[in-house]
Image (cartoon, rainbow, N blue to C red; front, side, top):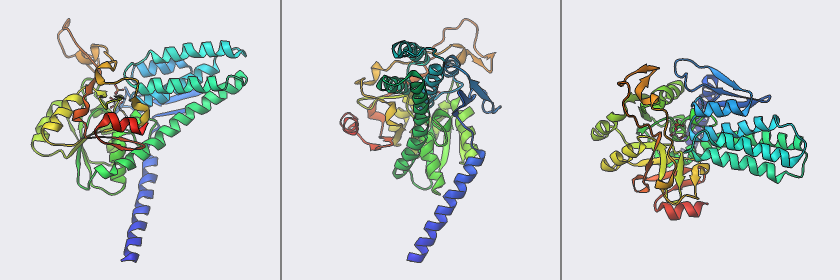
Length: 370
Ligand code: MRU
């Protein structure tokens, strides 16, 4: 039995190695920092075209975040950190006070891109604080330190996602069918795994037969354009549905679990995520389906006590009235386009983080983790 168990272990080890090798071969880079440039995959062109954008200064990065060429809470944080590093390179003074005051302006510029994902503000604070801590060094070394910090934030994000994916395995069984919303994959993070999709990818990597139902995610279609693209690339079985079909499939008993990401989780566990997540959480509760949120600690905002205080981004009405630049609603119609909604903690079964799984009561258990 021991020999057999050893063989199984070896088999699993080899299978995971081969899988990872193949994954890297088909893998895209969400974002990278190279030679004073930020290069990112243009998510507005996927899945039809796989093209990369080069950002030469922080304004280019801010534009990419605003237009959602890069999107997803952790990815926005990584991009902002890299944008600050680029911006710092362009400051021409040797005096720390002048340098720092210019750096603060760059941070402010990047902070004004998207208001809901707290990872953006978390990354900006981390970059400001590393510059401030090194105020006694010369400005050229501070610029290098900022570049290293941005790359560190990026690399940490990838390994945090891998850890979260492993932590989440106790919630996934062989044969599970999982519903996900928006895109919480490699594209929404520093790359490779992602948050909610990270848990699914690791399950697949470990040989669990998981199947995914992906909501198309109106109006920006992150589900159909990005999640499906990522999962097809990984060879993970996926079925695309429109958002309004989720209840139908839950009612038929076809969904075992829901896994989503988060843009901001506040002190009591209330969670802002892509518009439509709130609706899904109620549907899941009604059908007795566990509803899991997967997010790194950088997505938790302890300064806000409960969900109604989370700033919700309102985006261009054209995202609703147009499809591929073609009008699909009568001209002049009044439109609302909130990009996120807030799921109250009572609908969340657990939150998966890199430090472990947080279960209710969230107020106490989140505090304990910090
Ligand atoms: O508007 P987006 O595409 O930036 O929204 C992204 C989401 O809502 C994701 O679910 C969230 O950022 C978590 S991604 C790891």
